Image (cartoon, rainbow, N blue to C red; front, side, top):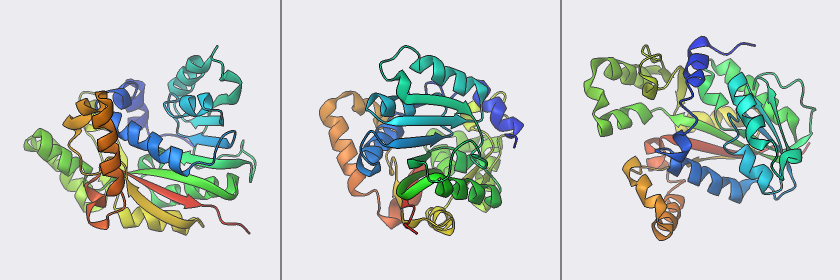
Length: 274
């Protein structure tokens, strides 16, 4: 299976390399917090599908997990391997080229947890998303946990209003298309990578339905950042303010009336026992 050229072009520019350590730090901090709450304890086996350069796989391996990272972008796999090389936890992490829709190299019922923290929003076709979720279900042991990330249907509209980008007719057209059918297309992917790339943006209830439809149980959808202005990211440098922000977002993470206002969503579900 092939990755769409627009998606590959976007990631080949290296735009994701620093995002989660700069303006996306709240997303990273909250995702790590949610992992600490929902993943089984180490040394569980974790499959990180679409794991990029290892932003989550590396700290999980350092914490004692056994992690297999799979990503369709060769540069990501190479970077993850290089980052792990020589580290004390290098034997607990491996990185491979692969596609979320076809995990033939991973045995059925062989892992304790699956991370899908990117693939679902780059699979525009619902059948492709269903296939990725079904593959995640297949490789999980009974009782295993899946964490599935999605981008909110309203993310670009809210970001455009906050930054003023919506006043650019090209970006306003992107917003209108996102709101209409959830398909996000950036015609300026080569020159405006900050407008992202080809993606699918979910409604919260739609994400839950897709996860449940793949056979998972106890599915719930949580806000990652919540309705937090990203300018508050600077407050994450202060330990007390960081703790306050994380506690507050956690308190409203499952409030239905606020879910869509979070740029990123996270579905948590269980592979049921036979």
